[in-house]
Amino acid sequence: MTLVKYMLKKFAAIFFGSLFFFVLILCLTDLLMNLWNYISKSVSPLVILQILLFYIPKTVWYAVPIAMLFATAYMLSDLYARNELLAVFASGVSLLKFTFPLLLIGVVMSFGLFFFEDKVVVQTYAKKNELQSMALKKSSSLNNEQIVVMADQGRVIYKAQYYDASALTLYDLIVVFRDSEKKFESLVKADGATWVDGVWQINGGVMFVFEDDAFVKKDIDEAHSLLIVEPPETFQNNTMNVEEVSTEEARQYIRHLENAGLPSAEAKSQYYKKFSFPFVVFIVVFMAIGLSGKTRKNVLIVSLALSIGSAVIFYITQMITMLMAKFEVIPPVFGGWFPVMLFVFLSIVLLRFART
Image 1 (cartoon, rainbow, N blue to C red):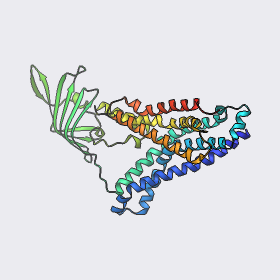
Image 2: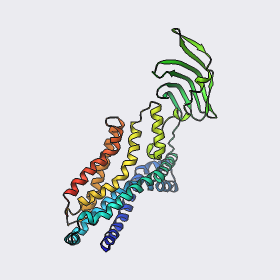
Image 3: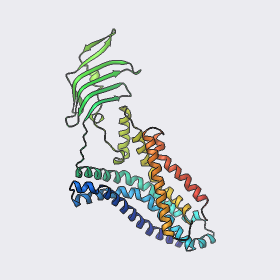
Image 4: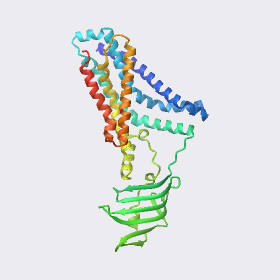
């Protein structure tokens, strides 16, 4: 127990110190990348500080795996350099048994990081982006034009010339109804439709039904009116970033994209990333155990270089797989999970050849 306390005390000091360092680096990087824009738009220092404060939870989310990797690798390498681990091994304690408390910490922090991202990071990151857009006077509109949306598994197809988000109104609207075999059934053409009290009010609409090899013009009946139920959010300019919403909101957004027949691969890969990324915390502990003890000299520099190098390789791999998933070269689930699976394999290999 004394040995475990000694190890955890040493680990905690290094972890929190490195976490602060990596968070500071990420914040300064974001600041420097936008500094010229802040100056050109005359953004006040107080607003810049607020933007950075909202960005801190996101940087913590990114920095925790790197800090875990560095803290574990540096602590074990330092113990190797001081010959303290040799005494541990000589007493019959294996490397895995000695580092088991760190593995438990990795498991707990993996789940904690997931809930931290879902309950805290998404909200603060959205606020950061919103405040930054306002400060830099970046305009974004929910209005949309030339809209085509499929709903009800392709049985209802909406086509509109323009959607006014402020008025909740569709202009020059055509709605095509198809049967279960996707064959044409009827068509509604209207000058527009306005969303009022949870329903679409059709303006200047008529219905065409194909009967006896000809289109027959009719008034819109109640049965077809009740089928025009797609909410206004479906027609607006979809600018939602899955990284800025909770898992439940992301799930609903993906369902909306699928129902509307819109591309959803990128959103799905980001959704899977929400679940895969926290497990990196557990994996990096394994990797750090395998990386430790490679040298007895310049332990701090070597551990820092290995940690940053591993993080760079991971993020580059993740960036590539996410792009491949976006363009549907690979399934979205691979885009989110492949980097994690790759590092699991590398961690096992490193642990296999670690000094014990």
